[in-house]
Image 1 (cartoon, rainbow, N blue to C red):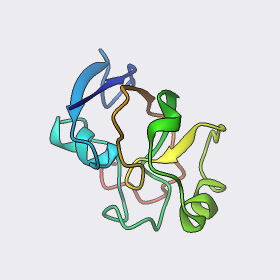
Image 2 (image 1 turned 180 degrees about the horizontal axis):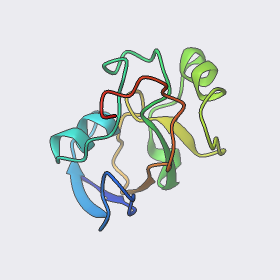
Image 3 (image 1 turned 45 degrees about the vertical axis):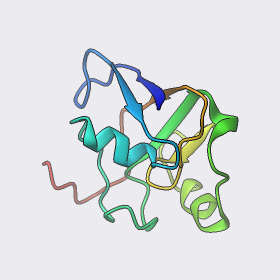
Length: 112
């Protein structure tokens, strides 16, 4: 199991969290399984940017981003060099520290 430290997010995880993920599981799947309700408007099909995360530690251990993910990341709010779509980033064997950005560009959020 890989440990994922989730930094505090004002809505989804105000206190932050430490969760476990299986190697090969996506970050999004691990977050959702642990009751961290990250947006994923396209149902994890790599068709939006609502599950964008910034991997503060452990970035190199993730599966590589493909061209489609890179194209969508270019549209994400608050893009950084360590940004990934959590639905596409598969966990490796190194622990991670993940930040969920404060905003998304989702104009039709199911939560609002």
